[in-house]
Length: 277
Image 1: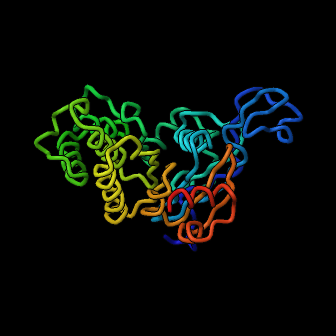
Image 2: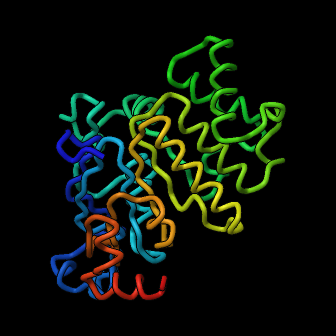
């Protein structure tokens, strides 16, 4: 992690509101819903940076806005307002949410990789594991079959899936293995930033541990920056260099992970940490 370098990603004032909003919205929020007009502020004025080679953890309960934030970055949701810039896109000078569909596809295929909590969102379940990776490579403009085969082999080996199973479809793999295939697909074009959304939720503890080990290994091998969303502080403790704590669509605390876990300042963070002990 190099805080003296330019961030890989900078997000400023990300807001995503469901509903028309009203003049009283910001003063009349009950959790993240306006008591006057009923609008829901899924993300409310969120700002943060991700630096080269770091894992930034985002923690919070269900409904806190973590997934909204993550999926807005990957263009699954359109924010109401805000700005996000990537160091590797237009020298960090252009808001990615003000780009054309073609530019968005280019960003998704070359600069970012996404791993969803539900593997069915990130994989074609009827394609082979190798074809899932090849699809991502083709989307980035390569048509070299030999390269695709080599890259799929390399990536599946990196996530510890036997290459003898390359031609099998993800629907025949366990949940933990589906997440590994998703990770290998996300890495296909050497992205600068990997987005991981609750990747261990619903997995057995032993499988969780293997996936977390794999994430550590990937960071070490590829030197990639990772944005890691979880509701589980144990996952954050194990992996994240810095952590953002979210509640009701807002950031309530941020800092070095050790600092937040050892000396939480916000009441909600204190509750989270005490539930871990």
